[in-house]
Amino acid sequence: MSWTQKVLRVNLTNGTCQSEPLNMEWAKKYLGSRGLATKYYTEECDPKVDPLSADNKLIFATGPLTGTAAPTSGRWTVITKGALTNAIACSNSGGFFGAELKNAGWDMVIFEGKSASPVYLDITNDQAELKDASAMWGKSVWDTEDMLRAARGDNDIRCASIGQAGENGNLYAAIVNDKDRAAGRSGVGTVMGSKNLKAVACRGTQGIQVSDPMKFMQATGACNQILADNPVTGEGLPTYGTQVLMNVINETGALPTRNGTEVQFEGAADIGGEAMTTPRESDGKANLVSNAACFGCPISCQRRSQMDPNHFSVAGEPKYHGVEGGLEYENAWSLGAATGVNDLEALTYCNYICNEYGMDPITLGTTIGAAMEMFQIGAITTENTGGIQLEFGNAEALCKICDMTGLGEGFGKEIGLGSKRLCEKYGHPELSMSVKGQEFPAYDPRGIQGMGLTYATSNRGACHLRSYTVASEVLGIPEKTDPLTPDGKAGLVKAFQDATAAFDAAGICIFTSFALTLDDVAPMIDGDLEGDWSSETLMEVGERIWNLERKFNMDAGFTAADDTLPQRLLKDAAKTGPAEGKVSELGKMLPEYYELRGWTPDGVPSNETLSRLDL
Image (cartoon, rainbow, N blue to C red):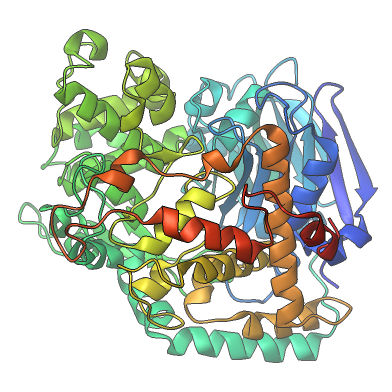
């Protein structure tokens, strides 16, 4: 069966690496990845731990399907207490690193303590050793990966590392693997940097065994066919990637623009998926060169792009003349619509910076958007920014600030605080478009009501990947619901949250849920693992994970008062589009949500609920 049943515990303080058996009782209750690692983390860490202290722990985790023949089985997660949020953090990534770690024989790696000097972890199957990373400290993710390959003399290794942002204390630093895949949100890279851990290099050749190969292959074959036949996973995402959404969400009237002051962006068509495929006048080439896929993925939604060095001045730097990871929807929105910039080349450049220096583009772009609004009202001036005219729509200023933020220089150091702390510092906390300290993504809750409840209740701070009700409210998957009404959204959000937790725990991409249900996933798990795994069992696993995360946050000091949205979304009505005149009706949805969850009116999981879920 494809739990490897091995955990690698790395004590950075002592410089030791030790193998220990996986807790199989926990594995059967939490499945793997997000679920199982969260169980380990919450058992071993005080909820009130300082995220940047040596007492905090950092866990790299795979799922039981990671590295197998299951479709999209390249997923892995990072679990810790978030530097940005002080809440439970679980950040998910794709690429090839997770599958390599699983093939090396590890379900998870637990990092504890802090190294006295920069180190990296070198793994080859069951051999693990901490090595000096002093020469890599101060280097970008891209340079670090090249240096690791050269040091090993092996181009087949897979790497996960932090860039300058993680070293410099940027509170939303990411952990980047395969140069453009990232565990991006909540500041997990910041935690890694605080431990003087620069990277993990891994080579795994042991292979993975499943419990019932015939049953497993039949189930994976059926799922691959469903994904191929679905218009979203078989056509839309391969052709345009997540950027297929830019114009769709803009027309829905739910594209947060200029720090959420508007819900539609007049420049959306200039930065969307269609624009990326349109040949440029300067050289006849398109921004998009090709799509690409993570390990085991039949969807291939990744973008590969090439900049036009003749169009935008900063594009002339030699390091960005090649084909690199291109814009995805969230990145294009946060760096574009949220800042009022519609220059596709500028956004591509800033996206490269995020990959190279290791930053979450959602928090980066929305924090710059908040700074631009404060610049507009005079709360921030050129004296603060070092002479930069930080105005909405200023592409050159956007690029300069992104570069400065990645390197921790000048005003970029303040942008690295995230919008909550930045807006508080300059006297306008109401201008931070965040929940629990994390900036919300590219869907305005006034135009998509379910996303308002999703953001407000997300355990890791505002997040679309914890309950993507856009699938139902906009795309009609699995059934169409009205995005402008709060009715029925409490049940919809709960169902999405629990199912998503199960997908994450399994080790497969949430994008498969556009086509697959847990009824489709369960047979793969059943063939993969010993025991009986049904869709009902997986849904219970998801609910257990959600409540465990909630309990940790409440023990950390969060309350129902944190299940809210920025006042702008609750009081300032949308000015245009289908949602014109609408605000988020969170107040109608939240009490029903608590009741459906089996929580008290104060949002606390009841004793009955905790008992039922064996928590």
